[in-house]
Amino acid sequence: MENYMNKKCAIMQPHYLPYSGYFNLIDSVDKFVLLDDVQFEKQSWQSRNRIVSNGQIIFLSVPIRRTGRDTAAKDIEIVDNNQWIKNHRQTIEQSYSKAPFNQSILPFMEKYYEFVNALIENDKKSLAKINKFFIEAMCAELGIATEIYLSSELNLTVGKRSAGLISILEKLDCNQYVSPIGAKSYLNEDKFQNNENVILSFQKYRAAEYPQFNTKTFQSKMSVIDLVANCGFNMALSHIKNHSIKRNQKGFVVKKKVKDVLLLGYDERKTRLVNCLRDNNCNVIQSELPLNPWPETDLVVMFGYRYILSAEDLKTLNAPVLNLHISLLPWNRGAHPNFWAFYDNTPSGVTIHLANKGIDSGQLVYQRELFFDTTKTTFSESYKSLFSEIENMFIENISDILAGNYTPITQTGSGSFHKLNQLPKNFRGWHENVDEEINRLKNYDLRGADCRSASQ
Image (cartoon, rainbow, N blue to C red; front, side):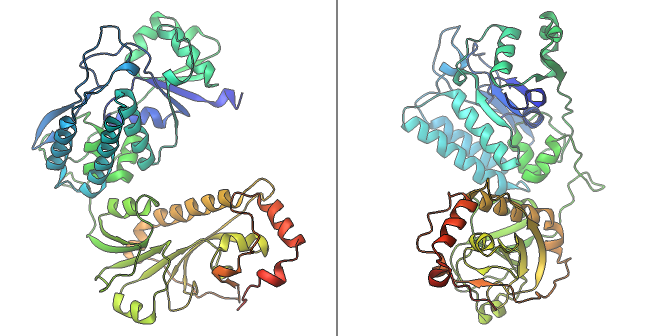
């Protein structure tokens, strides 16, 4: 039983496009259970929710197949007809096409409905599962890392009301239950608080106002997509955590001047930087390939970009060019820096630097050293940590990066540099334990044959 006395759990029925308070509850616990093996409630939030369109509240309702009165939520199926998906897509597009953060929410919803379409085409029409997918996807974008389960997949004989809750808590090794305030009366009736093995607390969430671009009167408890469309993912998370959103005297979020940013390398499927830039009022142009001609932009960011910018490219771009490199420069410039940090026993870390005509040799802007227990770490695990850390460092400093409020420092020391073809030929792969693999490679004395580093 892992850290039993420190695990919090919350349990709710799976809602369709839930409102911000739902995500506040998820964010407040370690494990969150979607209760789908109890009776489905018709005309409930499980199959519909609300958004604001042209100043009016409208419902988005999912049509479901007719069922018996006692049908469990897990057995509720959406209709085969995908016309409702088209209607929801169009309604959301029309309602939020002019929203401040339309480029954050509209692509997200497009992908969600593509998933729902795919389920229908594969004859999988579970309402609970399409709700779970939305909730998990939204949590991922917001940065909420809570583990999410369907109760029907926990293999429980769930009792009624409080007895059912207790069985879920025991199954997930949780002894703290965070309940929505609306359940307080029935929990009191069941004397839930008398259970010596469970600490009961109630959610404390106030659905505060946030600026809504398409209505003069604030409409409370709309679907979370309304919050993201108006405030972006970063500020939406702040709101969900019950933090206030800064406003100017007119009551709107203070917006900075739009900046055009060229992001070379990873797209939004691979990095959080795309949505971070959009949430900070940037128009993002993303490309994995060189562009001809180069667009006029205020900033260029390279992350996972596999090409070298020439002196002519840098001159044409005529904007600050930042490169995100997963090493502690000047160590391990070039290819496979994560491997060489361990092999050469040099520092591991992450660096954001200004690009120049050399390879990873430009002035340092931000840098952070990381430490690993190599006896318990694989190469891929360390890479994931470095990848996440360099994203965090960029996001933490996004305001200064966009404003140019940083002082570049020239790299000092010889450091090291490695080419792509210098990785040992019999390297077993990135999922190997670092210590074991490095020791094996060195025992084969491959350093002279395959692992020459071009120190500068």
